Each structure stands twice: as structure tokens, then as C-alpha cells.
Amino acid sequence: MCKFAVMSMMRKRKGRIINITSPSGEYGFAGQANYAASKAGQVALTKSLSKEVATRGITVNCVSPGYIDTDFIRDLSDDQKKSYKSQIPVKRFGTPEEVANAILFLVSDDASYITGATLDVTGGL
Image (cartoon, rainbow, N blue to C red):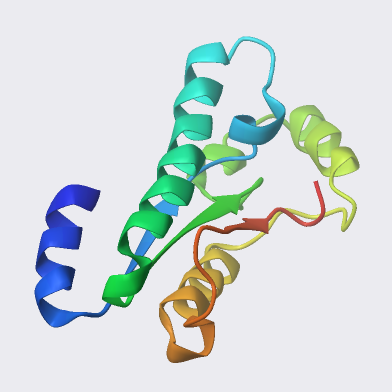
């Protein structure tokens, strides 16, 4: 996806690429070695690609959502939810809107000097 996005953005000499990763890529979690490796790879891709396309007016960043209140989380048992919330310093799950706001910031002109970064939206995990 990045390859095709970059080709289009290079013609315009401007663009924003936001990859969605996961805290698993930084911390790893038991039973998720393949998932963690793929997410760590996304971060490495983001860092490398950001350096390759920076002079073309393109920024490349990651957003790393933690536990977000979606259908996936809602289907967990109350005990699982309580356990997960106890790991989060702000003691709550994030919202899809909070993730969207982080992405909107990174695609805005206000973030034109931010590239190769991973923005954690994790409540402090």
C-alpha cells in the first residue's frame, strides 16, 4: 500500500502516510509472536520509508492504539475487561474517536515536521 501511495504523492510533492501498528510491536505479548513481529516490522518500515521520502514533502508515521472500546473489547468477560483496565494507567479503554483524532493531527499541516514517529494512543501503557 505504501508503494502505491508514495508513487501518487511524489507527483504532488506532498502527502501523509499513517500506518496503524500495535503496542505488541514494541512490547510483545505471550502467544502473539507472529503478530508482534509484523507490527514491529510496520514500525521499521515507517522509519525507513520516512527517510526515503522526506525530501518529497511526504511524512510517514504510525499510530499505535492500545485497548480501544470496540466490539472486540465489548465481547470480553467483565473479569478480562477489569484485568486489562488495571494495566492501563488512565484506567479506561480508549475510544475510536481518540484514535481518529491522533490520525487527523498527523495528517494535518500542524504535523508537517513529524515523520518517522509512532504516536501511542494507549492511555499510558
